[in-house]
Structure formats: C-alpha cells, structure tokens
Image (cartoon, rainbow, N blue to C red; front, side, top):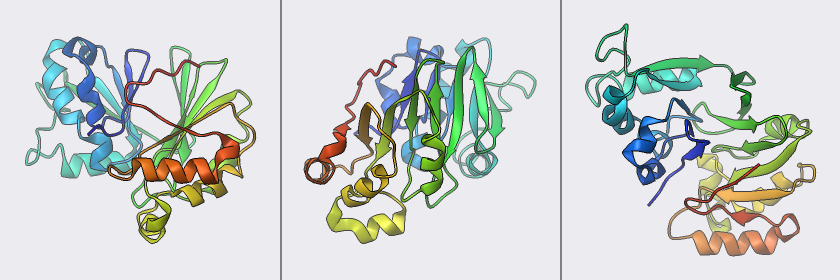
Amino acid sequence: MRTTSFLLDHDVLIDAGTGVMDLTISELKRIDHIFITHSHLDHIASIPFLVDTVGGMRGKPITLHATEETLNILKQHIFNWLIWPDFSLIPTSDKPYMVYAPFSVGETIDLGGRKITSLPANHVVPAVGFQLDNGKHSLVFSGDTTINDALWQVVNGIENLSHLIIETAFSNKELGLAVDAKHLTPCLLVEELKKLKKIDHIYVTHLKPGEIELIMCEIERDAGNFKPRMLQNNQIIEF
C-alpha cells in the first residue's frame, strides 16, 4: 500500500508517505526539499528512512518545510532520539543531514521560479495544502481536509489554476466517521466542488483501501459533472 507523496521535478517532495519507497537511491539523493502538509504517519513515514539512507551521500542537508506546529510534532515524537535520531544534529549541528524550515499559512517559497504556497486546510491536526505555480500554470493539492471555505476563497483567486488534487477518504456510508476525522466523502466532495470555479483537471486521492471502487462509484454518480478522476500510483502530471 502506498501513501501520500508527490515528486515535483526531481528535487522536491510534497509529503513523504510510503510512496517514496518507489524511488531508487539515486533518485532519493537528488531530493533537496520536503514540504509537509501535516504530521500524520501516512504523510511523513518515509522521512526518517530517506534521511538515514542518503544523508551521508549528499553535500548539503535536506530541508523539511512545514508549519511550526508540524515541525514541533516531528521534533517531539519522531526525531527525538527515542523513535529516531535527530538528524538536524547528525553528524554535527554545523553540517547536519537535514534542517527545519518553518513557514506560515499563506507564505510562498520560491525555488528557482517554482513557487510553492501553503494553503489553509481543515483537519484534526494543524495542516495545510499547497499551490504549485510554475509561472504558467498552477496545481493545487488540498492535503487532508474536510469542508473548507477558506481554501476555496484562496483557490478561486488563482488565475492560472489548471489542476486540483483533492482528498476523498471515506465512502458516503462512513459520513459520521469522516466528519469526526475531518475528511471528505463523495457527498461532501460534491458540495466542496460547487464552491470552485471552472477547472480543467480534478484528481481524487487518499481513498481508503478496501473501499476504492465504492468511493469512485459514488463520486462518478454524484460528482459526474465535475469529471473527477482517481489519481493513480506513479502518475505523471504535466502542467
């Protein structure tokens, strides 16, 4: 089972779930930046192994970008010398394998003309989505979220928006659980998409294993006018 991770070009990860395991060591060595939506395991599981594997092979540290709240969770519960070593101090604090780079919601980070902006999310832990802007087109990734008017207020102001990747974690029969866990179901997805201006490409991700077919059937039935498609493992999106 692969969990959330997107590779932007060759050097940037958006989240680092178990999908990172599909990359070779040579590919892992090229990753300079990891942008983290939130601290849940399915979005950060590969970070400790990635840094441990290639940290000593690189000439500079890997930069972890996240909100201060998310970075504090990682420091307290992952890179704490009890669960995993603190690679911000290894091999030395002056030349570590990784560094922390906090950002605020709404902040834009420019990586050689690629602008990555954090967007508001509504989840059970501090969380964000991301806008990836190459100057001509933008892709928005919602991250884990539920009903989120603040997101659409920002997204509808993105003039060059061409792609949306949005979660739908549960089927309609699990609406109560989805509300408690702050995720979307097909019926909630439809209501959220109604808030969105026209967009060319909509992809659905974060579907619960064992319910993928049911969730997609409900989406196709309820949200057909929006033509959302399921995001596939190893799918390449050009924008």
